[in-house]
Length: 302
Image 1 (cartoon, rainbow, N blue to C red):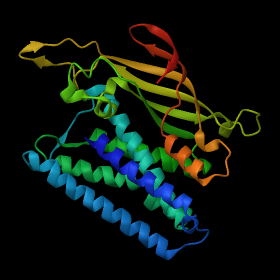
Image 2 (image 1 turned 180 degrees about the vertical axis):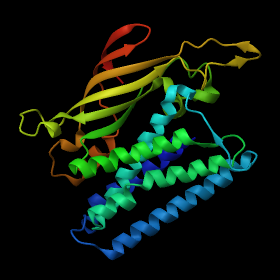
Image 3 (image 1 turned 180 degrees about the horizontal axis):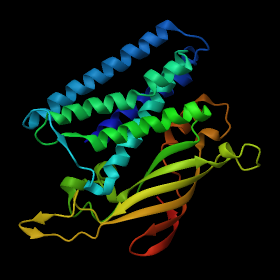
Image 4 (image 1 turned 60 degrees about the vertical axis):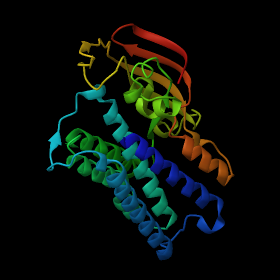
């Protein structure tokens, strides 16, 4: 659920950024612009508040409420859901900081108030989970939210740039058809629900670490994590009182990638497009390591 919600929020914020960069009025301010800052703060507070209210009425109202409680779901889905939380917190924080940069807010406040946007929003959703009998507050999710925020803010403090970017890729699998209620029915739902087809990447820009080299500024090396054979969150899956065997395994990947934001262009539109799609891993030949086949080479991996 949280992945779909975060996707909607990201799409909205990307749309705002696109409009902002194409309008001369919305070019980033060199000094603090109080009107812009107030607009950003009020807009984000309103959007966040309305989203949480909508969740409460459209999602949580369908399930029984309970006293606040916690759960330990760290072993479920081979931790793919935790990578999803980290990814979402990272990019919401990045966009939060960018909108405050547009307002001319100081670097410190960009990170303090914008960079923590993802952590704040996703933690609020986690608290709502804590009052639902169906779920519960997950310390694992909370930690993953903090990790995503820390990845963004830490790099800004250390290098004043994002040398390592979290990215996402997806390919369709056979498993969604076996459990469409859990893994999605159709491409749009599978993109959000089928962990078997998802890969989360840490994409490192090589030139940023070796600035005096002649390595192309757009070239990245990416390290990915994925899973295969998951039909449920854990090993136990019974359908009509029959145990369904799951051949669950982790997969690790090594590949090349492109940092689209490093491609030179004078077009504000292209810069916006590159920023949006820099969340997606560019398909490349990829080396896979897993527990079943050992090492496997993909000519092109999505």
